[in-house]
Length: 274
Image (tube, rainbow, N blue to C red; front, side, top):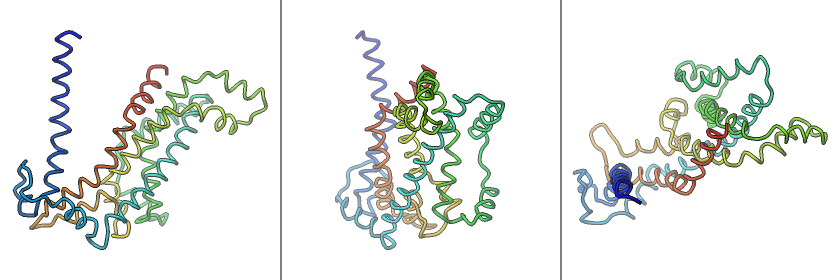
């Protein structure tokens, strides 16, 4: 390794530390302070460590609202990601393997789903008409609808790397279309499936605006909306607010740390080979 590469690596590490590590440390030390110390918003060690006390107070606030929020966010994330993987893989397979005159129209609709921003008011009107407004089911469908375009493109690119000979061999053996997809193609999609699961799980779990618009009500609270518990018009409890941020941030952070290689592998495999 020459000096230029060494200096470049050191610069990248320092920049990463400033951008990612320092904000996390600031959140942690503020979450461990008393209410008075945290109000100053200075980057300093706590004079008195109240990490456990703040943790318990955040968990117990408003009759354990944070635990309910974790449950709701987990249900929404698990169900929505499952549907995204299933529908995204099936649509991507049809677009790649079943050419027809409708494919161009469908592919254009998928691209439009990426480029056109969602309209909040018409979406609320549709949910109200279907009786799904202020429901977990409606929120799941919203997350699926908003994430499906990106998921379809990922699966379509990766399916292009799978030889068609496998499909033809399964047809010769008498396999039906659904059997070809579920028994032959889907098991080969593991890298891109892991990518979709991790990326969409983090995005849905961390979503703030969509639950705010489409899922009002205390019983439907999600983890991001619990941040309002410690903010008021005239006063903000920064120690509890930052403890709440810490508790909300840790699960997605753990997922990303352990699966970041799979994310890169799944996205680059489809891009390079497709």
